[in-house]
Image 1: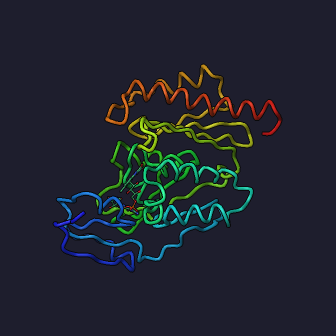
Image 2: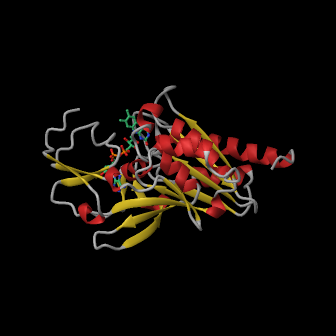
Image 3: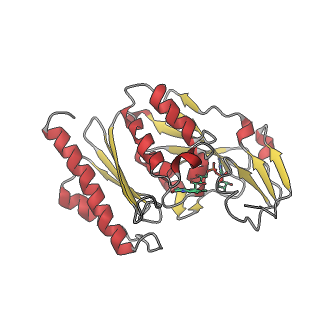
Length: 277
Ligand SMILES: Cc1cc2nc3c(=O)[nH]c(=O)nc-3n(C[C@H](O)[C@H](O)[C@H](O)COP(=O)(O)OP(=O)(O)OC[C@H]3O[C@@H](n4cnc5c(N)ncnc54)[C@H](O)[C@@H]3O)c2cc1C
């Protein structure tokens, strides 16, 4: 894709370099920014030169640098992550849920996927399910923290103010030792997801189910225990922002989200009955 409006490119080395001139936008992997015309953009500011660590184990859990690529995160999860962080099993199926998966993984960043804020944002599904928060650098030199599920406010829209940059995604320790699952469906076998349901059951029995791709922004449903089938069906179906596009109708998305959630619920219930959970 020729990006004909862009005439400048800067590599950010310090936070001060993130002060954007009119027409500049920050670039992470560039997979989206380079994939279609950017008529209002005249300059790119590269975030990857800030040398943020990809992953850090902190006192409170796991910190994923916003510029960590999806491929690097997967490699870390599958070779280096603490074995007791069972919830990270969600990383592989989440990455697989991306259309064009491995081609995009190697360059696309976790932060870029969140900030692009597609309804089908696979890292958004994973991070919302793990109660992750985004650490945001504000324009005035300060910071703010917001749940990833709340940062995304619509399909392709976030609550980031102009000039704000996501520095990191933090997954709290309490969400890292859970049982997790992901179910998805697409109208075309290799097409973009029409509905994704992810879920987490903590050691104390509490459960979180998250619907993405089928609704315009993550729908996070929390339960004190794994819910019964009817309770879960009603909670999933009651979302008001199931939407219609070429990848599926709103009614279809509602229907399949209910089915996918029930598959996860039944799996958790079966594990408990069999004593494997
Ligand atoms: C062929 C193809 C298939 C795709 N399929 C899917 C799919 O199935 N599901 C899906 O969710 N996505 C899909 N995408 C989109 C993909 O998710 C994005 O291209 C990718 O996640 C963006 O990551 P990036 O690091 O390349 O971001 P960039 O392209 O660099 O940036 C994306 C946006 O985020 C902003 N941004 C990036 N990092 C930050 C930050 N740290 N702070 C503030 N703003 C930031 C940029 O300014 C830009 O607006 C697809 C893309 C392509 C090209």
